[in-house]
Length: 140
Image (cartoon, rainbow, N blue to C red):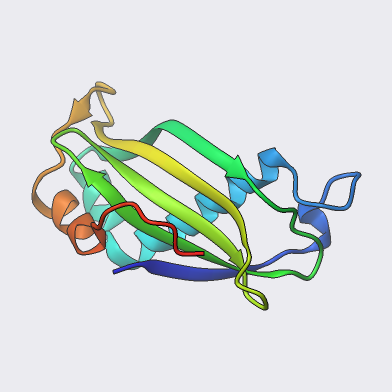
């Protein structure tokens, strides 16, 4: 399964060159991941147990520019679900053409909010991501 969400590029997303720059892309990728978590994870229950989720590595490829009014589809799925970390693959395509603009591999961990130490990806944390697990493949 792949999580998909749409984001329309607005003027405030643009830099002086009239396109989305690398820092803003990272924010947009994060917004897509938060939408996914909001849909599939009981974040208040995680908070109550003292658990959080944190990105520990981000590898982004910027392939084509996005400009004002572009309607983009953000796709997210899990390519690796290990004992203490997982890798989320993200791809962004222009909806009108299907052209891939950005892709990223995001490594994350579940961690203890008190100690900051990583926790095993088990129980409901693992169950939330398992349906989205599939080999890495380019979809755009």
